[in-house]
Image 1: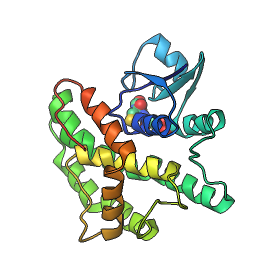
Image 2: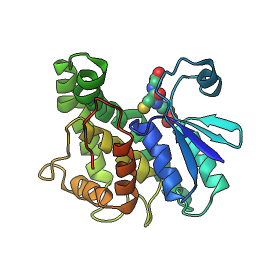
Image 3: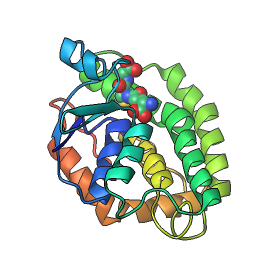
Length: 220
Ligand SMILES: N[C@@H](CCC(=O)N[C@@H](CS)C(=O)NCC(=O)O)C(=O)O
């Protein structure tokens, strides 16, 4: 039995959930908030971060490790290209999304949706401006150079790169940000394709149904 601890609205939980969905695995999503202070959660997540995967009592945190593990136990619908160079490129884009793109996208989500609607805190307008002026353009300009005119980010099928990048842009949508097709046409076209895919539409429907009270965002 597979369990995924984490709230589906988290970009990292969504990344792992998309990987589970793509592989067609059955699982239970146990809603768990980031930084959950319970001793039970700390025992399975030493860094206090979500998500954590549990497989028949074995637990593992961190989406990069979780997705690798899923690939080993369920090799069908591979997330990692067989070719060494393509695999390296996919893992690099995953790293780029997990470390840099998420900062911009989750920053907008936090400032524009989470703080005013759930945390009862004002939006930090300067932080938003910094993301829009600096962080986000750097990310978009880079991605525009690597996104193909059509198809997937790496090779000819969906990979961990697509899942990691797309989950970030879902977060940005909740933060009222969309890629401008006039400025980044390839990236905007790629994301349009991702949003119309069955994998993402189904995930976003499930996510909407699990939206915490007070949050009204829609990223579909
Ligand atoms: N590298 C981790 C990052 C996970 C992460 O940062 N999760 C956030 C929620 S989206 C979290 O739990 N933050 C709480 C904290 O940093 O204390 C992964 O890939 O799973």
